[in-house]
View 1 (cartoon, rainbow, N blue to C red):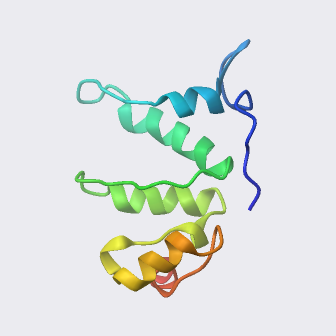
View 2 (view 1 turned 60 degrees about the vertical axis):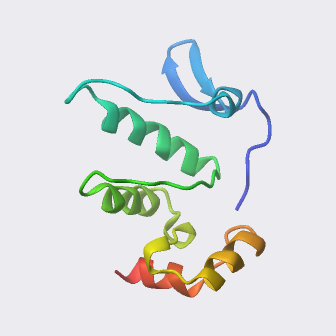
Length: 115
């Protein structure tokens, strides 16, 4: 997997002459709003941009359907093999993913991919 390292790399076009960059991503992003305000849609657009750029991360979710939604994002962006379902993984498998080569495959990722 190729990773973007230029902080001024354009990740997402916001307007004709305005882009969300890697520098913006490193500064942090937080979504707030009322019910139906577009938080899931907006965060999904940004999540896909992050996946395309080679980002990794940890997603925690309480909302029903959120785990499946993130699996869908991974599939759509060609990152299914990068997904690991922590709920199904053992501590050893998680440690292997943390310390192994970037994008390394683990049994838990295989199980998550097949589920």
